[in-house]
Image (tube, rainbow, N blue to C red; front, side, top):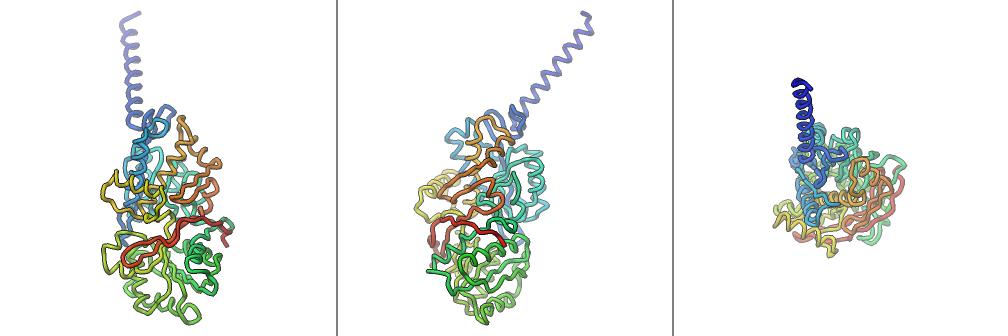
Amino acid sequence: MGRQAVRLIGLVAATALAAAGCAAERRAAGGEGPAGTAGVTATTIRVGGVLTRTSASGYSTKDAEIGARARFARANEAGGVHGRTIEFVGAEDDNQDAAKGDAAAKKLVQKDRVFALVPVHAPNFGGATFLERQGVPWFGWATGPQWCGTRTGFGYNGCLAPKPGAGSQTWWGNQMAELIGGSEGRSVYIQTTDSSGSKYGGRTIAQSFEAAGFTLVGVNSGLPAAAPPPDWLPYVNKIMTADGGGPPDLVVSIIAGTKFNTGLYGALKRAGYRGLLSDATSYDAAILKDPATAQALEGVIAAPMFEPFESKAAEIAQLKADVERTAPGTVPTQHLAIGYWAADIFLEILERTGKELTRERFLATANGSFSYENPGFGRIRYPGDHTEPNGCGALVRLEKGAFTVARNMKCFDNVPLR
């Protein structure tokens, strides 16, 4: 064999070795596993999230990252899932902007090479179409219609924006009826902002209270979503005359942001409103730090879709212990719980998928009659809950500067959305 041929063979061999080395480096960095799945190696599974850390209205879901980290840390301490630990790369901030959420999802998938997005907790998340097209699983709080009807988006509480004819939740109305001793002769008024998610939520929540026997006397979606209005009087006047010229027995706010609810409730109280107030976001320990905010929210009944932190359930004790080990001194918040339970469901599906992990196998497991019950958040059933909510929730009341459990977690049957 000639010298030139020998040199050529040597060059080909060196190139092959270099390529193999690069592939090994990609796998070690979480780029591709043995089956070619991004974010999976023999020993790790890489995930990252998208949150609304900051926004113009002050609304923030940043604590969801603490919750997810805490749940992943416990899983890793136990040896991971089928020998793989969770490599959490952190969460991107979408600033409550759909375009930024889309860019964040693309960064995590294309640059950071994650296997899945956990947690996704952003009311205006804009990355759904991209993730569905790429077949990338994502887990979080299904606050808008972008979560519904997908095969890759897994709301920890199902789909909260079902289409007409699909199941719609009744738990909020039923829990409130049981709390106050019945709904007969009781009226309810729903206040939302003009955002698509808030308006759609108002529609489904209105039906929840009607299904529980309340009389719906109004739904107002004219409140601007960008920032609280300088004058609450027009909205208050509508509420105070909604029930035959008088105030309703219950006002339900479907608004994202403490500033909004503080303004609305404070204005209602100054106008003499003495009825019940309820929303989905005021279960937040941060509000207790500001006396004016706490006073405005005094007596408000929040409706979290998980078992309250004040509960004596073993699962809540475990959550708080996990958080304390991961972030000592952290006060649990609703957003923290959402990140924690989203991560918990993701881990359960990983466990059931088995050691041979690809996105295709993971999605086949998740969407193949998957059912999981946990007293911490109720129950979840896929693929059914891609199109309807899980039907579970609790009630918490703010009394004298402290939260108390008004109703423990309970699940109710859904009814078709009109």
